[in-house]
Length: 141
Image: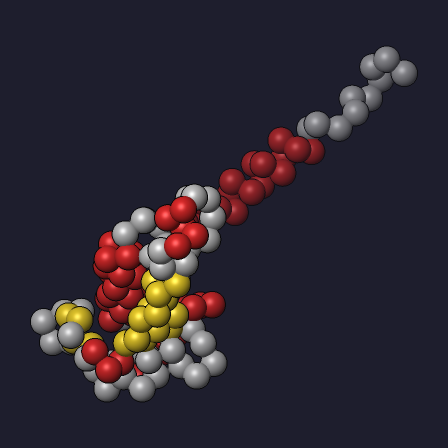
């Protein structure tokens, strides 16, 4: 059981972990010990998440979201299988917590009349400055 918040928890059947050898340098430890963890969470089939949360989670997960609606997280940073397992679970929890927060609706606003006038005045002043940058008549011809 993985607790996301007070009301949301993920059952063990929704997650599966596979262990294999990590990539990169590390000598004998990398060559013989399966420390890398691949955590697979069946997000699309999860009863704990609402459809809106699943949609946000899909956008947040990006390439980690598979075609069959699962999230695959790989952790191989440390030499310890237990620590890599904890890190993968922490990443999953953080991703789901991010998806739980609904984005604020943007309220369309209109610029004030004063701000519009100030903007146009600044544009005319700037245009006059640029117009004065031209070649001066009667000098050095």
